[in-house]
Length: 142
Image (cartoon, rainbow, N blue to C red; front, side, top):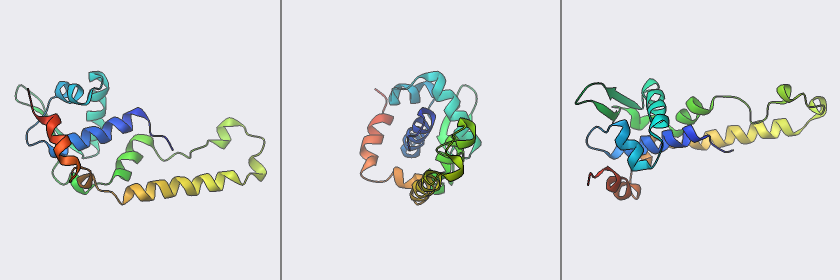
């Protein structure tokens, strides 16, 4: 299963903010992670809605990892960004094999297994060693 770009960005932003001791701006996150600012802004909004980030408006505002967000799982974030749809949309494609297809059930099981593995990984785990030193180098300002 391939994650969409927004999901990838969301996980990287979560990792980055989890190790930062200060708030970051959307511009700083975009620059550090080499991502388009407009996309980062949209992803930050969605992460704020699901409780991963807190955002503070104004001159001294910014983005920070939310209190308690370390307990959220990667699976929860993936579901929030990818949705719960099946890997293959058999009804939408008008597939003539639907009635006797045995593949759909296997794909459902594979998707469930994929998400089950991600449900075992907390966001806090992504910001533990050995990732911390690398993530901290990204938070340092020149």
